[in-house]
Image 1 (cartoon, rainbow, N blue to C red):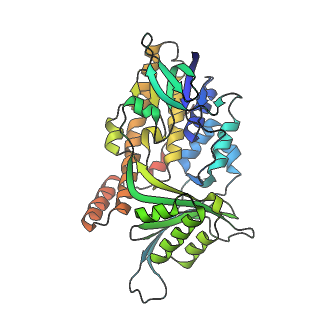
Image 2 (cartoon, rainbow, N blue to C red):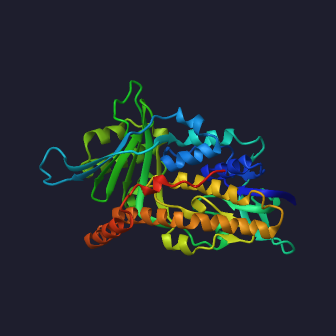
Image 3 (tube, helix red, strand yellow):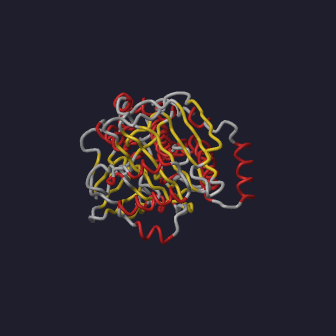
Length: 399
C-alpha cells in the first residue's frame, strides 16, 4: 500500500488550486485525476475582484490578465413579448451597472493550464480514479481504492471531485439537487473583431435567460438557460449540431433579439456544452458535516451552486487558499490535522451559506412560473441582498 501525506481527489479548478496553494506554503500533495490529461471541458469562467485576489495569492494572476480584456460594466435586459403581431421585440427595461474592480471573462482552459503549469512535476497522476474510501482500522487515516486496483493510504484526503463526489459520499453528504434548468454554453469567434462593448449582458424572457461577455476583441462567450423538456434533452443528447438547433429554436420562440440568435448560429460547435444545473441547498451547507477524521471536501463537492452569480470557480479557489493556510504547520499529528480542517470549515461555512442562498434564490426565481413564489423570492432578495454584488468584495486572506 502506497503512503502519501496529502491526496487531492480531482484535477479540476479546485483540485489544481488546492495543490498550488499547498505548494506555495511548502507542502507537497498529489492530485489523483481520472482523465488522461488536464480537462479543458467547459467554456468560460467569470472572475470578479474576489477571484483575482485569490489568483494573485496563487501566483498565476499575471499569466491570466493578458489572456482576456477587462469588462467595464454589466447590462440586464427584460424582454416583454407583448403582442405577438409585433415584428420586433419590446426591450422595455434595462439596467446598466459599471463594474467596480477587476473583472474578466477567462477561457476555462487558460485558467486550468495556468494553475497546472505552476505545479511541481509529478503532482498530477492521470488515469487515477478513486472508486471508494474507507478508514484504516488501526490509524483511522483514509484508505483509497482506485479503479486500477491500486490502494493508497493518505494522511489527509481532500475531495475536489465535483458535484458527484465519491469523497462526499464517504462523508455522508446528501446528493446534489437539480434545478429545472439546463444551460447551453459556447464560444463564438469573430476573425475581424466583434465590435461589442466590453460588458456582461443578461437578457431575460419569462423563465429563459440568455447572455454572455466578450473574452477579447475576437471571442465572445455566451450562455442560454432554459427549462427544456425531456423530449428536447433526448433529441439534443451530446450532438453539438442538435444542441445548437434546439438553442436557436428556444431563442426564436421566446423572441430574443436577432443579434443573440446570430451569435448562436455562428458559434464554434466544438465549444458547445449542455448541462443540467445542480445545487446544494443553503441549509445543507449550513448544517452539513464536511469532515470525517482527516477527510474533507472543497469546491463543487462541498457547495455546488448554479452559475447565476458566476462565483463557483472563484469560491472553489477561495476554499483552496483557506485550506492551505489552515493546514500549514499542522501536519505533525492527526489531532492537529483535524483541528486545521475544522478551522477551514468554520472559516468557509458562512461565506458559502450566503453565496448558496443568493444563487438558490436567483435560480428559483428563474425556475418557477408561480407569480406568488416570484414575489416572495424578490422580497427575500431585497431584504437579504441589498447590494447584490457584495460577494465580489470578499477577501479570503493571504497565503
